[in-house]
Image 1: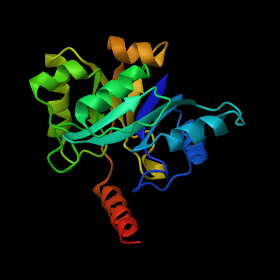
Image 2: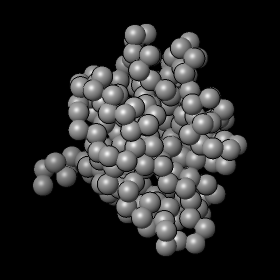
Image 3: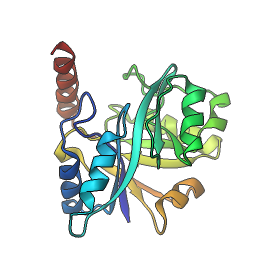
Length: 213
């Protein structure tokens, strides 16, 4: 089964996609599941899960959120309540208390100011590292993430970080069996290609325009 583990809906400040549309596109692209991980909220993921009930042959929905902490972004997967903290360790505690998985998205990306650049002491807080993010402009950022995951025996995940429809499925994981167990046990295969730079620039422009409104 193929899962894109990092997608943004219109509930992200720089997103544009309706949650239900994400599911329809994902199915057309041959995905079996998606993790909707909006900035600072699980609203998009919850709405997608509700709409899924009325769809025929709908893809699986993982509820998540991408949280900006005091040292950089963290993704919580398999959560059911909003994360209210911004302190790194408190965010981890909130995710874990819900039985969620802690993921470091696009770590070591030197271009994104929001990226968390983990040190060795941070590894004990983390379950998985996003080792393929389709929006990382330089492949060395993904390679550095892979190295960190291997050195600290952490699980690996991947995602498109999609903000537009045509980005969905640009990266993800292939698994056999339960997705949560596969991630925690490191039983995944990574796939993906980089997103064209124009798409990334359009997303950044959209975000800046929203801030002006």
